[in-house]
Length: 238
Image (cartoon, rainbow, N blue to C red; front, side, top):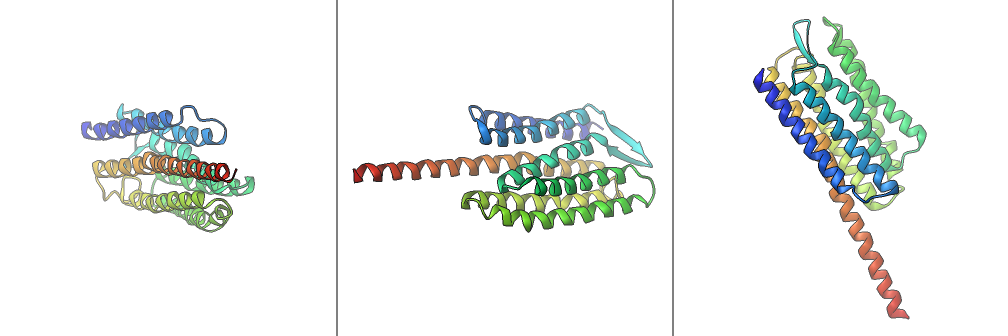
């Protein structure tokens, strides 16, 4: 019990530190740039709250001989759409495209939660529906969304592809942990499951945001340098 709570506290601290970093990085920003920082703050901030709740021993539901951490699923239902939203903003998706990716993500997370709370083998049927929706989401992010992103600047496309690949690869591990963990067949101990999920959560939320901030700063620096060079050339011509 204590070891699990310690892992949750580590997750809470990591998410809180990430939130502080995003808030600090976003100070003084305005307009469209500010919305990226607010999205990142929302992602890690809500995750920090969820991990704190679990660290306090709340939301642990003993069900059908399994332990389900309800705040974890609520966190995913609330924060993964924000990750998809961030990717969509970066790619320049329109409202219809946003509706598609956000709906697919919601189906994935909602059915995963519902499956975890269902007794017996029937839960794997619901899990299968969520898995199909995940495949569709991956297809859309790799196909139509990438095509839309390619119409923008090269820097934004490169960042989108980088974050998209990170998200898809790491998100693909979660279903495996679901099957092997307490929600599925229970081959993993709770300690191992919680440790692995906490690590993935930190990378997919805080790591995701730090990569975005670093790349964004680089793009702004390159843009500023190009403008300075252009201004110098104009002055020389005069």
